[in-house]
Length: 162
Image (cartoon, rainbow, N blue to C red; front, side, top):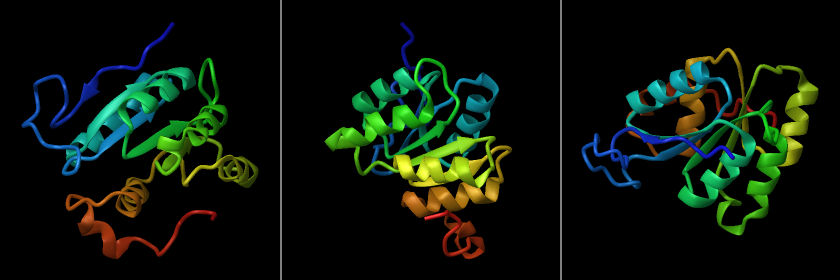
């Protein structure tokens, strides 16, 4: 049985951070089966002052979300053991996680894929390869962050399909 991965970033449990609290440094859960994508997202998020927990599959992502109660979840659609839509539905069933923003990250840019994700309860949809400005806009939209506020003027009012 796979488990979710180590917590990384400032204020993490690895002792490497400066002890920032969750209210200052948001906790992001990345649910992604490709190690290189997880690494890229982790680095980008840590550069923006966030703490990161990673999960390699849908089941581990649901378990991690239940345990850590993240401020935001970035979830791939195509995952082993439990796909992203099924994992998101399970997360949405948990009262304590219902309000956590879930941003689907996927290489599927087709409107039908996006419609299915929004119907399943996602908060936003980010198409791979990532547009880093769009990622910053999503972070700004769902988190209160001084580190990404500089891009606020460049964000359109809403880039989702909602």
